[in-house]
Image 1 (tube, rainbow, N blue to C red):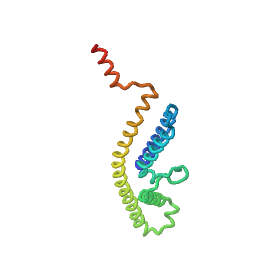
Image 2 (cartoon, rainbow, N blue to C red; image 1 turned 135 degrees about the horizontal axis):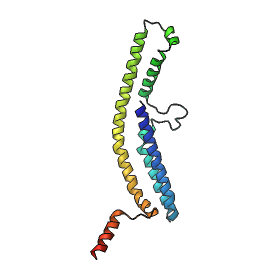
Image 3 (cartoon, one colour; image 1 turned 90 degrees about the horizontal axis):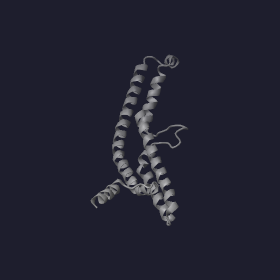
Length: 173
């Protein structure tokens, strides 16, 4: 359960970092570009595409997770509730209120519910993570490919292949 929550958290952080990167580059490019409205439109489209790429993750995560539930997944919620109820059964006060003849059936029911719901959620999230890995990796590579010329320009970096070509040209003279 923790691993699913951590995965969703990491993917949300990645989405947010890409959006911040696009925003920062937009601000830098606008300082030297004459077509500011085109720049705004381009980077706005980039942020919208980022939201679309990560929509499958975002729908399971509450942006304001400090107030309540962090993630929305019915099977995970069911598993967590069953686990919590099983923990409550170890409380002597609650145990005294239960008819002891029904306790084994209740424990069995909630144990199966906890394990079954978690297995369903785990299988689904493994499949989602595998699909997301391909999509997010490809998307991140595309974003970096688009923004890398801006990085080189603003950081005054000469690409290695250009340095090698210049060195070969000079040594060939």
